[in-house]
Image 1 (cartoon, rainbow, N blue to C red):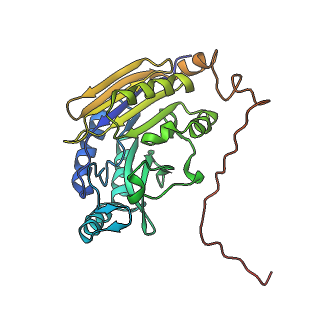
Image 2: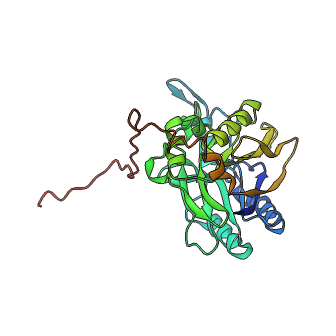
Image 3: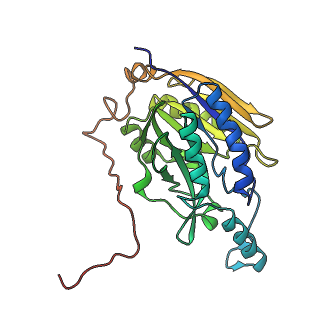
Length: 294
């Protein structure tokens, strides 16, 4: 049975501190993807809010500077709320064009910034949210840590989508959790522009027997390299290097069960008599109120 869908990856650079200007670019690529017949378009990590590559926010071990705090204040001002005006605009686009949109954003959650991936689906009230579990290296200074409550896949017209952000892709336990949910379209927003990243995307597609859609930013500091990969590890589109642009390709979701025929890492290849994985999907809250009168 053929389950052919058209999907797209948008390689764009987020404009640091300026989500409104970035949204103008995002809308252009969403419309271009929809005109090409795509049911899903994937944007990079931190598209809205920006990825501050090379900034140190005035921090060394044991010391922060006033100038660094001011830089963080600008970064905070350039983040978005979910829901908020930016998410409303993206939902209107998804509804108008009948397209699902996956996009990386810097999200304000209370008084903490999170690196987040949002999935907008036509005629859906609010976006699906995934918050990055493990910021890498200096990212830990500016972003908080997501919990297990946002690690779920979501159904779209293109297939079952799972979002795994940048180096979260190197967390084997998280990969197993996503595979176990039957992810079909593995969306990997990133800013990693190295050849090794594209090798990793091919490995994940082959290991999970899923389609991988990796969207990388392109800026003065980030070289791009977005790809779309088949469940057998073959690059179907990309890598896109040297500029912003759109990758569009047709996929056949029927290739996924064909691949699972000889490798289903959370099914017949899992050996549950030897190995097991426990996943806590509850929201983690620091303050838990109790009624002591009961």
